[in-house]
Image 1 (cartoon, helix red, strand yellow):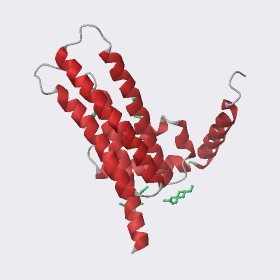
Image 2: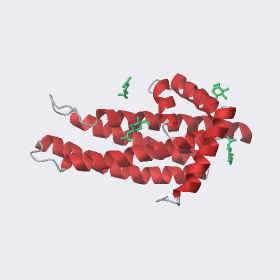
Image 3: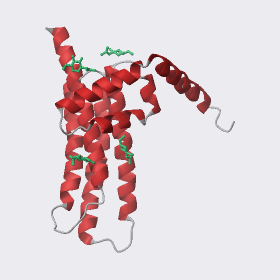
Image 4: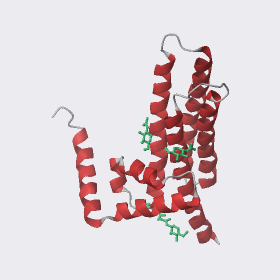
Amino acid sequence: MRHPSLLPLMIIILLCYIHSTVSGSSNHLIQQTCKNCSETDPNINYKFCITSFKSDPRSHCVKNLTELGLLSIKLIRCNVSDTRIHIKKLLKKDKLDPFIKECLDDCLEVYSDAITSLREAIKDYKAKRYADSNVKLSSVIDACTTCEDGFTQKNGVVSPLTKRNNDTFQLSAIALSIINMLNEDKLKDTF
Ligand SMILES: *[C@@H]1O[C@H](CO)[C@@H](O)[C@H](O)[C@H]1NC(C)=O
Ligand SMILES: *[C@@H]1O[C@H](CO)[C@@H](O)[C@H](O)[C@H]1NC(C)=O
Ligand SMILES: *[C@@H]1O[C@H](CO)[C@@H](O)[C@H](O)[C@H]1NC(C)=O
Ligand SMILES: *[C@@H]1O[C@H](CO)[C@@H](O)[C@H](O)[C@H]1NC(C)=O
């Protein structure tokens, strides 16, 4: 065993997996939530929502909407980190068109800010400051639209980041949608 430290984690995931396969509870929660999200927000595709959650083994362990919401923000963070690395790689290419380079520089900047926003969004979310978390996640939506829009400023240019921008956009919309559901519950409790 070369990575003994991974063993406990693997066992937990396996146990969760067995548990969820037997009870099907996390499955049901994900389906219900994705159904709600896609019905209330036309930007969210039901299949995309399901696939995104299922692609993460931690989704087998989620017990309620609060935990699913946190997972959705973590999925955005993974996406954004990966996209930053990808943009840096694209910027290293030889003979980069100056316009494309400018766009990629802008994208790198907004996505770097998005990492900070996501860190804060997670902190706010955990403290149940849902309105604050909402603001920070909205800025992530702005980041991917700003990045994508940059490329459209010149005719004939194709954005190399369309799929990634779209993925981040949809994931953020899912997280915002879940926050809205939680906020409604919270308001109901208060009044
Ligand atoms: C989905 O929406 C319905 C009605 O809007 C609500 O009753 C239900 O609790 C929601 N489901 C989830 C998982 O939030
Ligand atoms: C971003 O998230 C989506 C949905 O989970 C996934 O399909 C896609 O592969 C992710 N992209 C990257 C670069 O991680
Ligand atoms: C979900 O479970 C966590 C504990 O695991 C709890 O703190 C949280 O309030 C629960 N959320 C809902 C909506 O019941
Ligand atoms: C993202 O892509 C999907 C299909 O791949 C499309 O239906 C959707 O309109 C796109 N969303 C945005 C905001 O571009």
